[in-house]
Image (cartoon, rainbow, N blue to C red):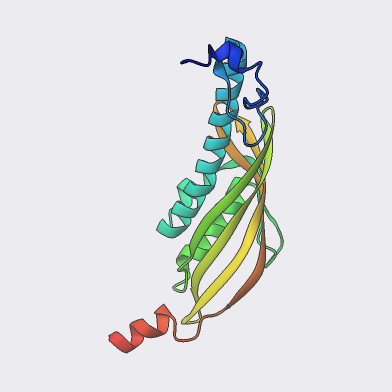
Length: 185
């Protein structure tokens, strides 16, 4: 470690970082046993898989891929947009998503970010914030809000158990991209 001593000696000095795994302090892998490292990797892997689930949801919405979208939900999964009654079960979810795709106005572009996840074994909960661009009735729309999610591990895959959308706003964007396209054509 250099002239000040070994890494083990550094842990005894008052000017060294604490060995805790709290915010702002580095992980000291030398103090962790294999089981602790495996558990830490599992937590990180699970959180990344759940973040990827939310990203894939947004991707499949953009691409209008109903089958892939439905596959992200548990068999008894639920979606609540607060615009209509909650949709329960994969068959009902598929029909609802297909109605959106069949609508000529279906131009949904969700951007998910700031994903916070709490793990509890094979279940988890989380909040993923969303900025939404859309076209409704020929008008560009902007929205912002968040998804309140519950997740369940099925086999090795994480699925949405429930997804509830709360929009802070969803408003027309005057002279937006839909109107600009008409003026260019």
